[in-house]
Image (cartoon, rainbow over all chains, first blue to last red; front, side, top):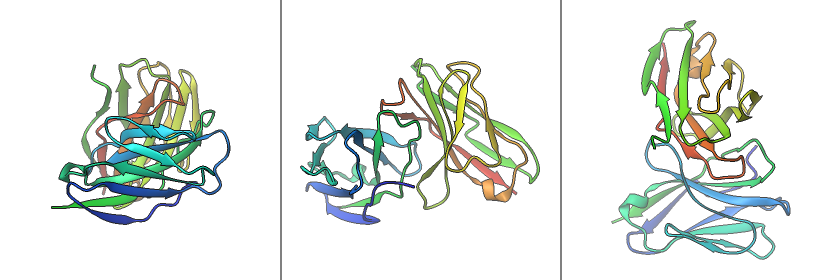
Length: 110
Length: 112
């Protein structure tokens, strides 16, 4: 079973920051948080991952709470092309199985 | 680089037929995996491999076989197709199991 809980859907206005939450209250000390997204029917695309420090790359920022029980993916200036299903995954580096949950369907509103 | 290549892109089978979905990657990735995605659902792990000669079961392995004779290829075999196997199948790979995965474009399979 997936170790994360995400809202099934969210809306965000174009040009605003999209903040996607993920709950992972049972996360262990050696487990990383990964985010992927799937645009329409394409294969999922890796976005970002982190352990306990906040991370930023050209696509997004990842904010992990101090107790590591939840995290937020931030798309700073959402565009219509960011409409997708976003998956939050928790896994340890030694894990062979990479299990996806149901994700959050993000709608960007013009 | 071609990345992760899946063939065919579309396939229609009759119940009871067998077939092999091909997956190849040219990035020298050790870790490869197969997922299925039913309409409106997330991805479910079928089988995975941490290297040539090594495979293991995921969440939904029944009705599927895999082999990993080379680093590059990870074919998925449907032994006797059933309508419940109608789905979109995605193959993914990563350099090591701990690295982010690269996904193929998927194979859309319909079983009549």
